[in-house]
Image 1: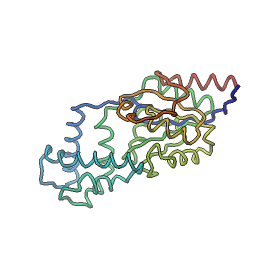
Image 2: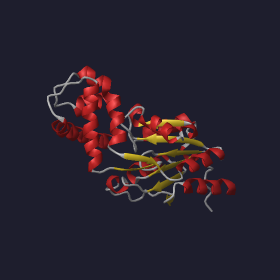
Image 3: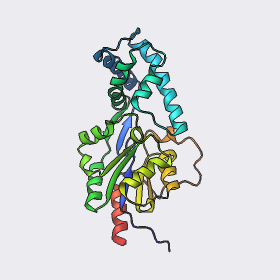
Image 4: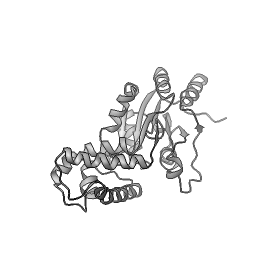
Length: 256
């Protein structure tokens, strides 16, 4: 009979895992409007109206995202917006750089409708009551949005640490973002569980690193991000209710 390592820590993806999220054409229109409004707020002049600006900026941001998903490297907001988003637009570069994090934050919370997944707060509270280390490991182009959003959800207190691609420079499933999270936790990979919504990022990465347990829960992002062949990479548990992460780990700890 296989003896499993006792889990001491649980790490979570953010968007699609701890959060439900979706987007549609209204989100795109709102993002275009908010982008133009932020430029006006910061007195950044551009020779275009709102629609013209969007039609120039949006393809460049998509180009950046495609490149980042290929290299698994994340640039800082000022590089993303100055060197990609506005690369074809005559603009005051220093003003744009100064506003870049505010733009990045806006984009993350406007391009997607986000809400805390049902039962996530109770699940996190339960994990802490079990004495487990809890962390988030997220791909994001904003430096501060994840921290702010967890505060807004009223669950920030449950997290011992938060590791973001925008800060460490590596995107999941790059091994370094997971290793940084493990080093901050002062735990071995086999002592940790990882919970995410994509095979491509949240199962492949932790499996290659040797995480002790991997959970998968589906989101609207799952079919878009899992288009490749991931034979040989499977989660230990597939759940439909995030609260099951607590239930299953509690059962394991009681048996051990």
